[in-house]
Length: 139
Image 1 (cartoon, helix red, strand yellow):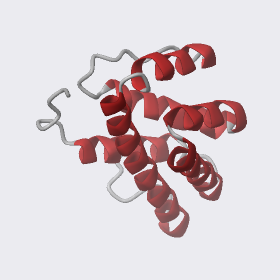
Image 2 (cartoon, one colour):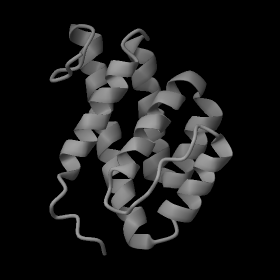
Image 3 (cartoon, rainbow, N blue to C red):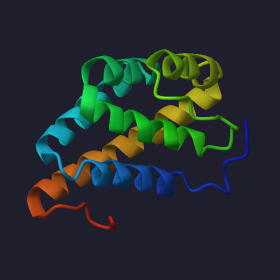
Image 4 (tube, rainbow, N blue to C red):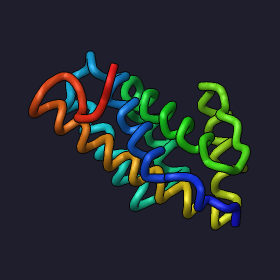
């Protein structure tokens, strides 16, 4: 497996979760929280590919933001993955060929994506309760 000891995966998960909250600050926090909660459930129950498929097919506007940040997170991992364009077919091909093909990479991707979605969900809840930004987020 690629050496990931020098990469702080928790930091990356938090960074991209905050970006989701920042990019959706003009949207209703409960809608974002709902999208993220559903995506997290699909990820946990059905896997990485199903999560992307769900977001691309069922969660149009909010899903696009989440997908973009999930892809950005994956491209920041030390595998040399290049983020595909916003074409749904290219994204799904990328997930299938690059992420899910290798079990160790798949498990790492799933774990870090799950953590990112958890942080994003908490960020949306915090925004809903207290203000327009998630704690720790800066403009």
